[in-house]
Length: 235
Picture (cartoon, rainbow, N blue to C red):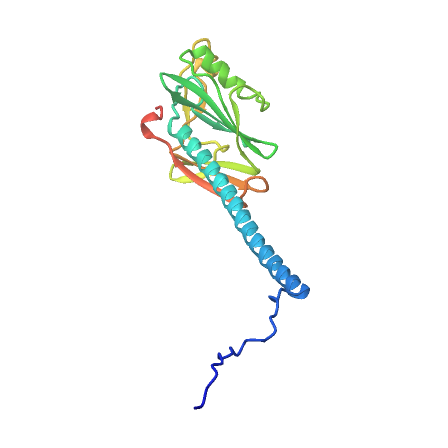
C-alpha cells in the first residue's frame, strides 16, 4: 500500500524579497516646485492685470461722470437765466461767463471761468433785493478763485470759448449785437439825455467749447450747444 505525504502549495511570492516603498527624488521635488512657482506667477500676473484694468475702468467712469455733472450744471444755469433788466442777464468777456439766474424765490449771480487750467463756478447768495444783486454782479469782476461759493468744476481745461446764437447765426458773445435799452435801476446811472444805458440782449442759444488736456482724463475739444428757455428771457 502506497502512502502519500501532503505538501502545501507554496505561494509564488513566498520567499521573494520585500521592497520598501519608493519616495520622490530631489530632482522630482525641485521640478514640482518649479512648476508650482510658474503657475503661481502666471496666476498672480493675471490677477494683477484684472485689478489694474478694473482700476482704470473705475477711473474713466468717475471722470466721465464728473464731466457729465459739469455739463448738466452748466445747462441748468443756462436754463434758469432771467433778464432782470437791473444787471445783464448774461455776459461773456472772453474769460468769465456771468449770468443771473432764478433760484427759488430770488435771483443769483453765477460766474463760470477758467483759472490755472481749472474750470471754476462761483455762485452768489440768493437775493430778492436790487442793491444786493447789483453788488453781487460787481463782485463777479473781482473773483480770485478763493471766494465762498467757488467750486472747482473740472480740472485740465486748457481753453474755453462761448458763442452766442442771435439773428440766425452763431458769433462770439463779445461782439456787439442786439443791444436793447435797459430799465434804469434804482439809484442807477443814465446815459445821454437821461436815457437808460444799452445792454446786450439775451441770445437764443449759446455754444460752449472747452479744450481738455492733462488732468481732465480726456483730450480734444468738447462742444455743447444749449438753448435758453424763452419764457425766462426778458423783453
